[in-house]
Amino acid sequence: MVEYQHLKVHAGPVTKVTLSRPELRNAMSDETLRSLTLVFREIASNPEVRAVIVTGGGKDFCAGADINWMKASGKLSTEEGKKDARLLADMLSAVDDCPVPVIVAAQGNCFGGGIGLLAACDIALVSEDAKMSFSECRLGIMPAVISSWVLPKIGIANARRYYLTAEVFGAKEAVAMGLAHEEVKPEELYLKADAAVANIMKCGPNAVRTAKALLPRLRPLGLNQQIGLTVDTLVRLRSSAEGQEGLAAFLEKRAPEWTR
Image (cartoon, rainbow, N blue to C red; front, side):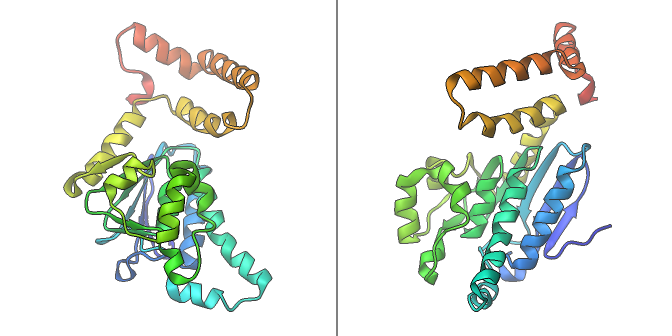
């Protein structure tokens, strides 16, 4: 079994990935980023996986980047610094590109790069006790790499406030700005994640993968191109074995084969 630095991974149809540096509030170093990238690329190559749950071990989800790593990175040459900074982009891309739904359940502190990880996931559940901050400007840097994933969620107006003040905000604000989907009682956080997975498992596996892959393709297209792509996709799914089974199961008032 592969051992990942700073992670605990429980493989299966529902794979669970837990950040496991509780003594450092799950702060992410270069090793953490490489491990997350590796595990999500392995998940992407496994057709048996149907969903992923991401959590943080201990009382915090993720305090952001490991400060000692960031300080050392600042002393690298420009070219080496760029390679180092791309580790975060590679990790977020691997999470975002994961072909199955990724559910994140975040509690406690969720700062900086931890928010980037949350934003790259498909479904974000945040505990009522969560404390969040784009804290980078307090350190003399800025929320740079994570912006490609954060801005589509929160928009420029919210970024102008929370990036520039680095103020701490809670679960309610995270939901209001579109960063998270739901504020959850601490004792129900993982139950909510399991409930989201249970709903996913009722859906056709290929339909879910196709829907996730289609959504980012639609955004840059014009209306006619969107219609053409969605029509082609629907026709393909409707005539597939999975589509035929789903429609037959509905008409026959029985559970489809993939739920058994």
